[in-house]
Image (cartoon, rainbow, N blue to C red):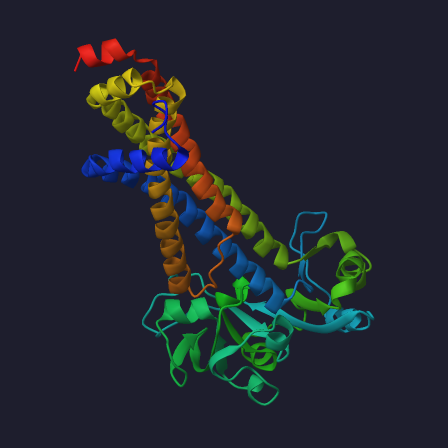
Length: 393
């Protein structure tokens, strides 16, 4: 000590000693800050990991898939795609593959004892053998439809349809329409075609023979060259139905996944706000601890002021204590938030993604809260006169 003042290292040691003399209160206040920071870091980490998983799905599935379906005519009635629609689309140069499905007016149930009204939201569709390749899907078990089995009463279940029917393996039978069909395959989920997840797929020849459908597709899935997706999208309606292009709906399924990523970002902002409230409550706890510390250490303040310590040293001493307290809570909160985000991402099968900005933001937020919380008690301590502090001891 020189002239009643303290060097920076002395200030740090004094602040650390002050926190050590009231460990329980300091720990509880730091825990309040840690909870707020952990909530914010965990939300950012989970959101980024989820978003990274969605973008990874887009990379794997491709953004060059287009869906073509029949809309409504000018008279308000449901229209149909022409039977030759798939062939016409295949003539478009940038188109890599085309596959279609046709809605079948039948229901599928686990047994013939279940009423027809209980459909579990499962649609029956006739599918081209090339559908799975066009959608870049995978069979979870069994096989997909092909030219050989499409003529027989066999069915491939989408992931959701199999779950709703309680079917986990192939070789069993389901009641489809008015006869038994053998399950030959169960698909993995198809993020770009969730309607297929909820469908029971039968062969086009079998559906035409057994249910009397025609060869007009209800939906076409078109895989185009990645660099020409928008150009293909612009001409598909006129290509599929030159006479009435306004009755054709063309969409890009990957846009739905991109919208989900944006929606997750919106929810992240909401949860970050809740985390900020928790952090604010923790800051109030730090301020309360520092105010009590000033009251309890009036004699120490008075003695140091009597020995010649300038006001700025008293102010810095308590401000550093507040920063150390919130810094400890911030470090613990960042670590806890990362562990929560990593654990949740691992549980969901996502790759862990934690932006550096989220970690740095959590640490900086803790220090800012600590500085604001400790500012008033530090200024109050510095304003105490030596005689007043020693007299009220």
